[in-house]
Image 1 (cartoon, one colour):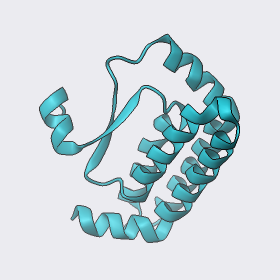
Image 2 (tube, rainbow, N blue to C red):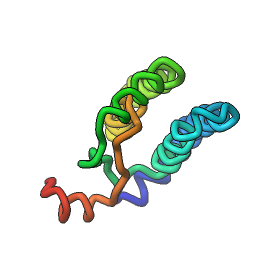
Image 3 (tube, rainbow, N blue to C red):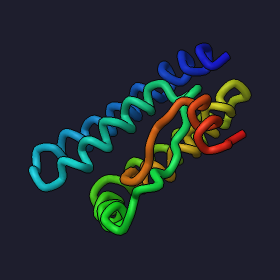
Length: 133
């Protein structure tokens, strides 16, 4: 089922959302000081292409620098990517087949607003390491 949802996701919205993250990552990597945000953007772009079967968890070692970095990211690109996820999620929820995809889009909004201090893991890893389910 995850494979089918990922294929539908890729066709309907995953590709375009990943393109948005890649563009933000390229812009951040051009400016030398913002390379950490660019790398985080590329990591999220990979997740935005194929999200089902993976989840986002907070890194236990993230500290104050991640918070400061997330504030800068929010101003530079996070708000615009979150708006893209919100609009896409609402549009996908207008159809019955799109409801799980819309919910997945809404789950991507927090990480699009604050990507630093987050880690993308498979759902099996999250179950094992963090006791999710």
